[in-house]
Length: 107
Image 1 (tube, rainbow, N blue to C red):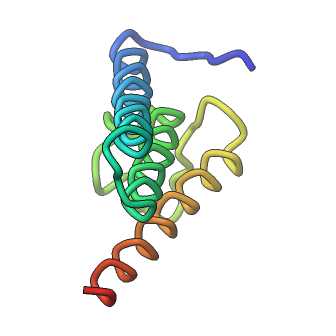
Image 2: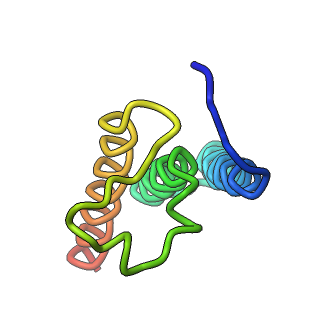
């Protein structure tokens, strides 16, 4: 996979999203193994990881005006196939919502 990032600020946005996502995932895995983190919390952190990675795969999201993002004719350029990026985003949001409702209903 070759990523074509056009500007330095997009490269920084992509790198930040990936680094922060991997930090969430690695600290969650560490806490799960060594500190007894609940599985539902680990899945929540994994969903946040998926959301951050999907945002990192579309760095123009951070630098596009909101009215243009909400326009029905606007297509957000991505670094990989847009269906893969959207799948990561949809899976992350879906997992997050499932975990959110599961935690709130079980307490």
